[in-house]
Structures are given as C-alpha cells and as structure tokens.
Length: 73
Image (cartoon, rainbow, N blue to C red; front, side, top):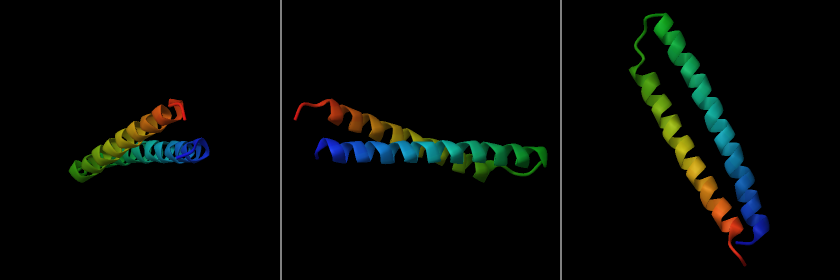
C-alpha cells in the first residue's frame, strides 16, 4: 500500500482508538453508577474488559501501520 493509503489507515486507527477510549470512560461511569445503586456489575465489568481488549487491539494495529510507514518503498 502506498503512503497515502497508510496515512488514511492511521487516521482511521486514531479515530477507533479515540472512540474506544470514550466507550471505556463511559462504561466506567456506568459501573460506578451501578455500584452506588448496589446493583450487580458483572456484565458491565465484562463489557468494560471487552472494550479494553478492543482498545489494545486498535493500539497494536496502529503500531503496525506506523512501522509500515517507516519502511522504505
């Protein structure tokens, strides 16, 4: 893929990372609300872990893109 395409992928990866971070922050607020109300949090915590796992995958993908951008043509 050419540099322009890789840069487009990098921009998309950055958007995905930002969205994942927003989901994580929101889910943490949901969990705090549930805890304050003495509600069960197992499913909410499980979803948080899934969001965190997804964020990690997005960050790894971003690193792959950066490596490819540094490679000579």
